[in-house]
Image 1: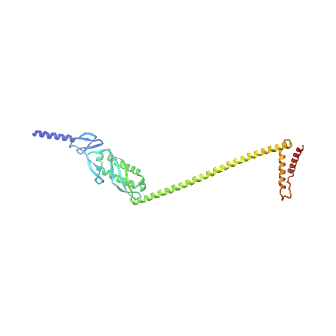
Image 2: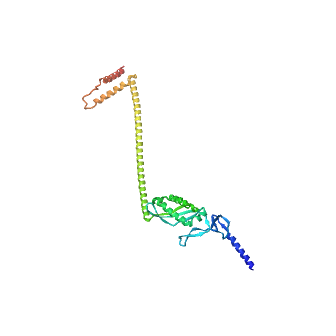
Image 3: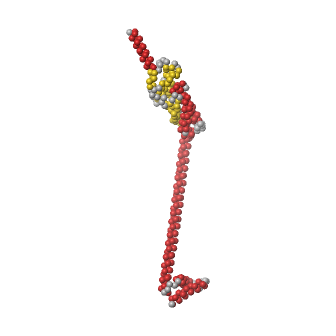
Length: 328
C-alpha cells in the first residue's frame, strides 16, 4: 500500500508539474515569461511549454471598467498575467482645463491605444494605465491652454490630432501605439454658455436682417430692371411705330403725288390735247386758288401781289401758254 501511495503521489506531482508547464495562450494575447527573475521570452498564441517553478509569467497592471447596480462606471485595476494585444479604450473622468482666455472648461476624453511591444509595456513602465491617464490629462491641459474657448469648441479635430501626436511620441518607449483620441464633451461654465447663446441668437438675428435686406435690395433691383426693360421695349415699340408710320405716310404721299400727277396729266391731255408740261398747269391752278383765298374775306380791302415779279410773270406766262394751247 505504501508503494502504491508513493507512486500515486509521484504521478500526481508529475501531472501537476506538466500541467503547470503547459500554457495555452489565446489569439490576440501574449505572456512575458521570466526565468529566475530575468526576461526569457514572449509567448505566442497557441500551446507553449515552460519550466514550472523556474519560469513564471510576469504580471502587468491592467484597467477595467464596470457598471455598478446604480449605473455608475467603476474603474477596477488589477495585476494580470496575460497581456491583451487588442485595441483598448480608456474613458477618462471629466477634468477642468483652462483655455488661453482664462475660461475654465470641463472636458471628457476617450483614448484608443494598443500594446505593440509587450516587453516594453512590462519593463519600461510600472503602472501603464495610470501613466497613460496622467499623460493624456497633462497633454490635454497643455493643448487646450494654447487655444481660446471659441477655437476649442470648433477645433475638435485639431485637438485630437495634436493629442494623438504627443501621446504617440511619449508612449512609444512604453511599447504602446495611440491610435485615436476623441473628446466626448466640452462643457464651458453656465454663464459662458448663456453668453454664447445670446451671441448666437444675435448672430442669427443679424444674418436674418442682412438676408432680408439683401432680398429687398434684389427685389428692388429686379423691379427697376423690369421697369427699365419695359420702358426700353415701349420706346423701341414707339420708335418702330413712328418709323412705320413715317414710311407709310411717305409711301402714301408718293402714291398720292403719283396719282395727282397722273390726274393732272390726264386733265392736260383732255384740255390741250397734248402732253404739255403739267407743272405750268399746276402752278397756275395753285396761283388762282391763292388769289381766291386772298380776296375771299369780307375785311380784305387791299390785295397785295407777290413781290417777286419774276414768279408772277412766270405764273402769268404759264397761264397764257395754257390758254394759248387751249385756243389752238
